[in-house]
Each structure stands twice: as C-alpha cells, then as structure tokens.
Image (cartoon, rainbow, N blue to C red):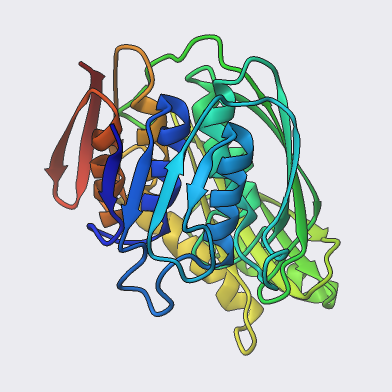
Length: 346
C-alpha cells in the first residue's frame, strides 16, 4: 500500500523528502509525497532535492513520477537496493551548490542494506549553509552511527562553496550485518577539543586569524584546543572554522562559514559561541545530530535513547515521518529546553 506524506507537515523542508526516500527504499514501500516544500521561498524540488530523488531511484531501480524541478508532487516506487559504484552531480541538472552531504545522507541507510559494499561519489557543495559540512558528517555523524554497527569511509577530494559548488566527496558504504541500539544519556567530561581553520583561494592569513581567535576564546574558558590550518583545494572561494569536542561518551561538532563582509574573527567566534552554549546546556547530543540519529535508531534492535541540548522542529518532523513507515515507539521528555528521546521497535 502506498504511503501518502504531506511534505508541508511540521518543519516542512527537504528533510521530509530525504527521510521518506530512505525509508521507502529500505522498506520497499511506495510513497506519494505532496506539498513538497510548499511553504519555502522556492517551493518544490530544487536541484539538491531532485538529485536526492534521482540518486534514490538509481540505487533502488525505482519507478518515479514527478521528478522535475519545482515539482511539489512525487510518486516513488522502489524495487531492490543495488550495490554499485555511483556518481551523482548536484549541478548537473542546473548549476547549483546544493549540499553533497544531504544527498549522501539520503542514500546511506538504504545502501547499508545492500548485499555488497558500494562506492558513492557526489559533486556539489561540501561546506555550504543549511546543511552539515563534510567534516561534521565524517567526524560526528559517522562516529555516532559506527557505534550502532554502520560503517562508512569518507574522503574529500575537492571542497565546494556557495555559490559555485563543485566539491567532490567519496563514500564507501559497507553493508551492516547487525544494527545495535545506542544509548547516549550523559556526555561525560570534556576530553579534548580539536579543530580546523580552512580557506580556499584566499590568503592563508585569514585561516590563521580564525584559528587565533578561536584559540583565544577557548583559552578564556580554560579550554585548550589543537586547531590546524588547511589550504583547501576548490573551484571557488570560501572560509570555514570547525570545532570537534570529544567527551567521555559523546562527540559534538560546531562550525561556521565565512561570507563577504564577515570578519575572520567573527567566523571563529560564531562556532565558539555554539560550542559554549552546548556546554552550558543539558544533553549529550547536539541538536543537529539528534534528528539524524533518530532515523538509525528506528531500525536498530532493542531500545535506544539519547539526551539532546534542544528539541528541534527538525527532530519532531523526522520522528513523524519515521512513524509513517516503521513499527516503532518514540517518546520525548522535554526538560528545560533540553530533552530525552527513547526509541523502541514494537
């Protein structure tokens, strides 16, 4: 039976599409999504979202209707998941710096169900607004799902910035033999802080200023950090600052992107503020990881749980989509803005 999904529900963004495509491939259940991104400034499928559809179609040999730019209605009928070497280019349909990370996230869970390893190469934005940068995907998300039995190897060949894109990432996805539950309730002591300060086709002194400002702000809080400088290969120009916080029981990531007129010092300060807010809040998992983890918990065996520093609309919307597909019980307990989430297969 076809699952019908209102794409304007809750947060109403592209996450509904991506989660629905992933779970449709995994469960082999046809879907019909309507009102796709209806409330957005540019509603319907944009290049990044259309690439997600085309990619999900390729890995599952799906029948598809409505796969075109600006379409607000989509029918997706998956078949068998296939392990192959895949290449997808977000800018192929229309020049775009759409997120390579979000396209990859659409494909990961289904390809963990394949019968052999797959290689996925994606060309697009690797460090762009409103999506997890490559380094977050590799060092935070990848590390978290590895604890559940999901193994992915990630590499970046070329960085892609807004508005040109053209970055290139590669993922090797190994089939998961068993999916374990995950429980991250207490983050524990802060063990180490690492980071990178990167520029592409700009003076290296900008990356140095970002690094120096970040170290200064962290030192004022009594935190030592090892922050490296990267002169990143790219077709475009951009700057990036990333902090990786390693706790006893959890890993969290915080980043900021440069922009025209934005001082290097502010780029670093923005990521540091986000890190400091997380430290002062309750919860073991940062809000960005929370809405990504719940999808994997929904297919894991037994009960999983985590605490997060903030219950977001993204998380709540993702839970709603998951419940359309999976026989799971998901409970949320909010605690002064933070919260605890339980997930258990029925």
